[in-house]
Image (cartoon, rainbow, N blue to C red; front, top):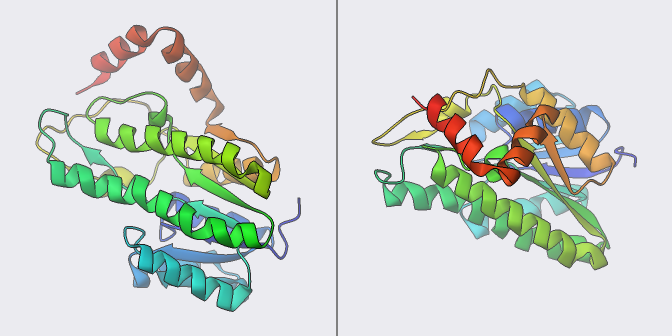
Length: 258
């Protein structure tokens, strides 16, 4: 599958995984639209990505359908089509189930889950009209293994996994492919930008991988039309062990929480 001439839209593209995905797709010949709530920051990220003639940056808060529709309209005005839509916008909430503020929990669901679903609903008619496309949802290994003190974040990713995989079956007849990408811990400002609640504890999961590694895995998954990608590959083992023996994994995470 060639990337030259493809039109790719990436939400949450002002830093971290989103910026890395925008860069790797642009480096391989795609035209990329970078979206973020912060217009200044996403324009600065566009400068770092380069390929000025094939990139566009604009403000878009995925919590609001009208902003998603505006971004789609401007993308179609500039490029006439959308071949790939990457749902990457999201943030974390560090707190226990007992102590977390419901307002913070709802706000995170609005971005991580409902924003992605609204974007899918907005772009699916475009892809149906052009007889094909790909939706990529950036989820997490935490969408397979619930992480203590990140329970609400894990819940958004469990739900996103389910939505994406079910949509993949529903949309196959329309030529629309859905890829779910589940990174393990990634070395980005994600933790620093997470909302901190009343009972903040961390589960030690190692140093993590780079955003660039996630971007490479995302690109490979897109080119190979995979259903799901877990990165790094070493996270496949904990996922399978959790399916077979959840108590063992929960015991280990309980020991690491602090």
